Image (cartoon, rainbow, N blue to C red; front, side, top):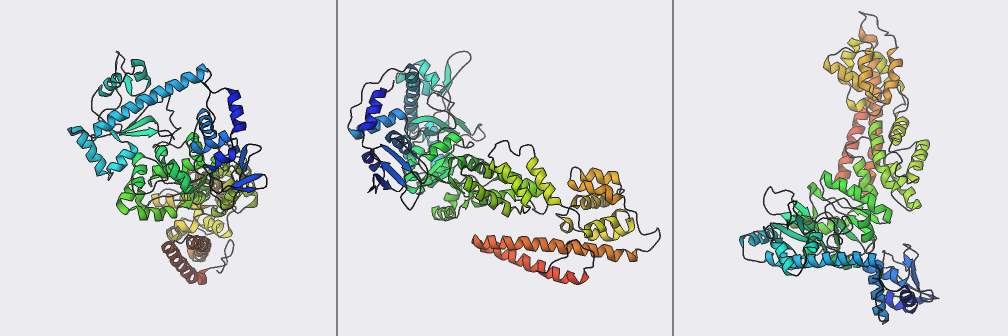
Length: 618
């Protein structure tokens, strides 16, 4: 059933869009032919939201939302089109006509309404059982109280308890007048192969999942007995519920989200409920699964800013990164809050208090800063392969940004942070990121390009040192133990130095085949044949005195170059830490900088004339 199109067209013309919008937006002021105010769909200081009464449309020049009076009510209230028509008609004082027949729509709506009605009966049944005097109900209440939840919170989120019975709910639903077919279609029971059915949720604490209007569309149920799996059992998809299209708690928190103009996105039920109880009420939960585009679009109706606050463990970090990729195409301004020690919002608020939580939430970092911090975590940008991995990890978050100007800003920010300085490489990577092609870079081209540009050619010092070490076992035995990994990290021939050290440590023979195998697919492998063609200069039995100082001078030069690279990195890191207000980190970096400069000064007198680029003086 639907409203006649002629009625919808007449209502669109009759409804005073200025009055309807004025019920939701305060401060509408006449400006020429239009009415202006700050937009209810995104945060702004100067009014860019416009309503034109003669054309019966609205439009925001800031966020781009616009349309008819029906579109406005649908977006702001999170309603379907028929529901928005009903709201507008009521506000306009226009009586609603009889619905016209639309069998397909009517069948779908009827099935969804049936499921919601059965869900409502089931929820009332479970709510009563949570309050009963039996041992099971008491244990469920003790769990709720043990998580610090008050009676008011329990009522707000309508928590319940499903008794540990095979058919208690099914019998109750039949007693309410539901047919066997309706009960089976509800997903509240499971059909047995031999006939009949049993209750899906048994002996579990119930968390109702509602739509944006607060109607129960599905349930999550937590096991109460130790070791019982799965820990959480969820409703199947039904006519009223499609997985990935709802956000837990939104029916309760939507008005606060709209009022605050931003949402805090968490993962689980208690991650929302516990902060809510303590006053943090602009929260929504993605139901413990990967955030979907449908959920992002739903959240977009109520706010344009999101703080992602998933669990702080590695799984939560990865889930936050996936959520960012989903939110960015919807033009959200995204920040990320990672709580210390891998804590989730539930345990953090209970352990540290809501004031500390709010303080940290205020320090949530922009999504690109979070992405770059994760991309460089446990990686060295001086190692070409690791630098390439970092670039490859960061680029999808640039590509996901819809606005081309913002996308370019994020690209430049990422390239600067990851120290991609070669203009040609940056241009190639921008073509990859700027195209917003989901398949771009999947074949490893990005990584190959970055590695190729980062490797460069061997310096004079590293080439000469390898020539001396590869062919002179006695010299190698004297010099190689002095070589640290940091001395050759980031050099074009780093993989050869590493392979040479491994062979020496294993007591194996240094041969071309051995080194070739150990360097694998590293670009340094290409330099090995030329280095191996070098003829040793020291005759057998001749003293190493003539060559040992040269080898050590080469090593000193490489070490000075390493110090220079790290000192340059530290300058950028100190500036970033100071800008972010991370005083402890800044002080630690300053101390590292001073120590490196002290070592460098002590090493300078021992530097010889063999070098790549000459070590600079900071």
